[in-house]
Each structure stands twice: as C-alpha cells, then as structure tokens.
Amino acid sequence: MHVFVRTAAVLALLLVGGTSAAAQQKFAYINSQTLLQQAPGRAEAEAQFQRELQTYQTEVKRMGDSLKAMVATYEKDQLVMSPAAKEQKQKEIAAKEQEYQQRTAELERTAAAREDELTRPILENIRKAIEAVRTEEGYSFIFDVAANGGVVAADKNLEVTSMVLAKLRSTTSASPAANPAGGPVAKPAGVSSSPTKNPPSTP
Image (tube, rainbow, N blue to C red; front, side):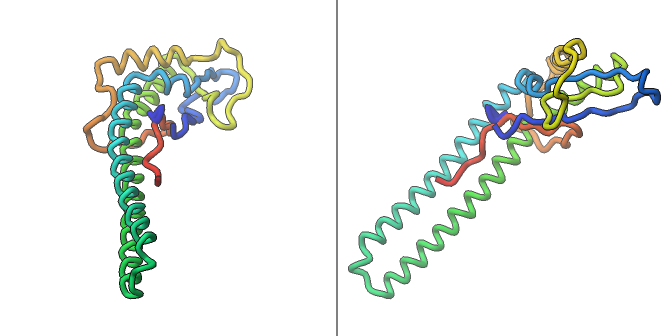
C-alpha cells in the first residue's frame, strides 16, 4: 500500500503438506511483487492510507513551524533579555521541543499501525489464494522468486502467479477492498510485505 513503499518483500516460502518421496512432489513458484501490485483492493487501501497520512504530516508540520517560530523569536530577542528571562524562555523551548518529538514519534507509530491494518486483509487474501492453488493443483511446495535469497533460476512453466492472481480476484471480488474503518486484523502467516508510503517524518 505505500505506493503503500515500505518494502514489497515476502511470502518467502509456503510450505504445507507434501508426499514423503521427493520424486512424487510437485513444485511451483509465484512472484509476490506481482501479486501485491495487482491484488484487488490495493489501490483503494493505498488511497485511504495517503489521505490519513496527509493528516499526520499536516499536524507534524504545524508543530514544527510553531517550534521554529519560537526559536527564531528567542534568537532575535535574547540580546535584550535578562538572564532570568533567557533561562525561562530556554525552558519553554526545551519543553516545546520535547512535546514535538513525542508527538512526532506517536504519529509515526499510529501511521505504521494503520498501514499494517490496511495491508493485512490484502496479504491474508493472497495467502489464502496461494494455499487454494497449492491444494487444488496438488503442489507440495510453492516458492516465491521475489523473496530475498529466493529462487535464482526456474522453468517458467512452473510459475503459477497468474493462476493465484485469478483465484485471488475470483474470491475477493465481492469482498471489501481493504479495511478502511475497521479494527485490527490477525496477522497472516507467510506474507509480510507492506505496499504503503512512509509515516510522517520530522521536518
């Protein structure tokens, strides 16, 4: 969801079931980046996150501008200020800066949590689609060529990305795109990529 950009990394390996004899096992692979880019609901979830992220960034900027104005005023007036007045103003600036830093950190955590909340349903749908294809087609293993340290070469006939994408679209067409206003969703196993924008940063 970054364009939802915190990494489009993973689905590293879906390993479920299989026969005991290696010769009887069926293997296939997917490209998780392709699935994440084309997953139903991704664009809607990304747009939702961007709207909320803008609110966080606006607040951070407003607080940062206020702090800068306070410092600028102090630097301009300090030559004519008494020692006691200087000390008092420095304390006020320090308190304002601490408040700014704390609020920025809080908003960063809020943005990260919201990004994860919006992304989880999509990743869970991808995981379910992969498992459905694995079960229906009788694969013992489905690997991810987009994963770090993943497959470096493979027979293109073994790729099932399009099959998983078709399954994903058919099973999620009647479902909500993401979770724009809902509560937390259980974190899916085997899928951990997040396609969203960066949380608010300190100006």
